[in-house]
Image (cartoon, rainbow, N blue to C red):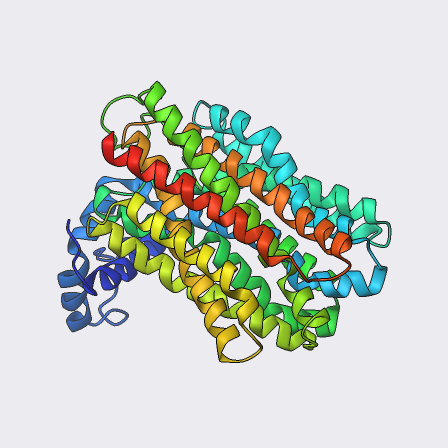
Length: 450
C-alpha cells in the first residue's frame, strides 16, 4: 500500500488504533461490538480509512509486536536520559567529580560494547522472551541499587552499569521487533518512529523533571523508571508469541540471508559514522543543562526549557525524514546533508549569544540531529534488505553508537577540567562532527555504487 502526502500520517494513526485493539484481543469490526458503543456512521467511515490496515493485521498477527518493540526502545531511552535533568541536582547534592558524573552516562555504553555483538548474534535464534525479560529485570535492579546509597558514587555507577546492560539488550530487541514485523509500505514511517526512541525518551524525562525534581528530588526520576519497567515486564508476559526472527513472521519470505563481505564493510563504515556522531551528540545532550546553569546562569527550570527545545525539533525532523525516505530520497544523501548542517552549527557556536542566534543554533542542531538519527537507524535495513539478519546488522551500528556514547560525556567532562571551564569545548566537537561528515560522504558514495 502506498502512502502519499499528509494521508500517510492519518493512515499511521489508524494503524496504531487497530494495533491497540489487537493487543487488547479485540477486532474493531467484530460482530460482538455493540451498535450503541460504535455508531453505524462512524463504523462506515472507519471502514473507508482502515479496511486495508485491518486486513493486513489480520493476515499478519505479528504486527502487534510493533508497538511493543517501540515501547521497549522508548523505555531504554528514558532510562538513559533521566540522568541529564537530574545531573545538576546530583552534582550539587553529592559533589560528584566531573569524570564520575560523565561516567554515569558513559557506563551505559561500556556495557553495550561488550554485549551488542553477543546479543545481536543470539537474538532471533531462541529464547527471545528470555533476553527481553533479562534486560527488563537488569534495568529494575540497576535502578534499585542506585537508590540504595547514592552518596557513594560507585553504587550509583554500578546501578547505572546494570541499567546499561539492560539498555544494550533493549536497544537492539526493540528496533528489531518493530523493524522486522512492519509491512514494506509502512517501513520508512516505522523507521522514523524507531529513530524517535532517543528524543522521545529525552522529552519524557525532561517534561516530568521539573515536577519530579521539585517534589521528589532526583530519586523521583528513578522511581518513575522503575514503574515503567514493571509495566513492560507485565506486557512481555502477556504476549503469547515473541520471536524476533525466523518463520514466526508470517509475511516473511524465505530464510534469513547471511551478511556478505560488502554488507559487512558498509555496516562497519556506518558504525564509524554512528560513533563519531554519537560522541558529540551525547556529550552535548548530557552536559547541556549543567552548561546552561553554570555558564549562562539559568535556573534549573530555565535550563530544562532550553534543553527540550532542540529535542522537539529532532522529533519533527525524525518524522519528516521518514516521509522523505518513503518518497525515495537516498538515505546517504540525507545523511550527508544532516551531518554537514550539524558540523556547521558547531563551528558557528562561538558567534552565537543568549538571544535569537542561540535559539536558532539549537534549532538547526535539532533539525540536523533528527535527519541523522533517522538515516542511521535506516541503514541496517538499507544494507541487508528485507531478508537480511536485522539483529546482527543492528549489532554493528549499535557497537559504533556505544563507542560514541562512552567517549563523548567523559571527554567533555575531562576537557572541562583540563580547560578549567567551558571555553574551547566547541572546536573539539566541531572537529569530531567534521570527521563524521567525511565518513558519511564515503558511506553515501559506496551505498550508491553498491
